[in-house]
Length: 351
Image (cartoon, rainbow, N blue to C red; front, top):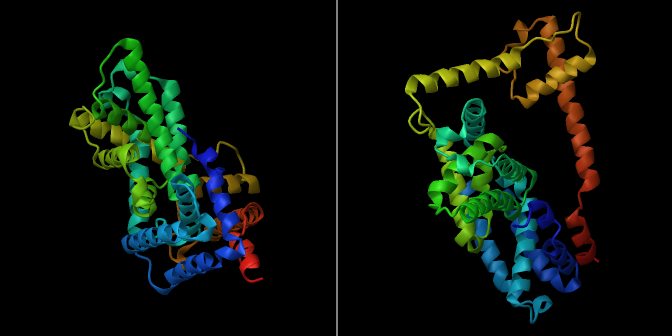
């Protein structure tokens, strides 16, 4: 299975951009630009936006097939162009279409918090994973692949992260089946391992990433093996949301005890005071701010301004400066590393 990192450097996207810079592509470029602009005319709606994107990609497939720039092109070359188009469009629309609703953000936070608790006590035996299928090396590789999902903006690349993770698990099952002359039972073996991997990985914004792939990946690509793996990860997400004593093969009192201990451990790690003596240095305050931000702890969110002490106002100011500094650095890095495709295309079609 091709890794998302290598997929990101495939010729599909850059070949698409190269052809779109040509004067002969002016009509296609205008259609794409018009479609992107049209999104600013109405309120975001994930399902409706998904339908619009799918309809546009289907329409553009016909336009590309009939276009002189792709005359005598093979089906594979047409598919490469559509892959490039999907990545271009969804990268431009990413901030508008990815996890924009309060409900999505809330679901992401709830799942991440639930996984954070389960991580502290769930073992393979709680998911009835037999010892013969235990492989720390393979599991670690699968975890790393799944954790990459939030690093990409294109639905195809996010899906490749899922595929890469699932392929690692599938290869593990195949290798064990061949070496142990053991007949495996498909999803009965695969899904519990994927659930365990998902708990170990706690991938960022899992709900929003899955929803994004479902809505905006070309429908013709969500078939066969791809559909199977995506469906399994969705099932893993639902299992985790509903995880309880029965589903984890535990007694109810044992499960509740583990969950409470995990909550206390999490709270203790957040509230643990610095072991150093004397007032915190600016570096220590910055580190604390980073911890609070990374852990989604906003101590002053529900506070009234008039109730804050001078010390709390100073802490709030430190947090504010930390956020602004990090935002500024991130913005500079993104501007430096990104390629402004619109500028490159406009420079050709406006000339």
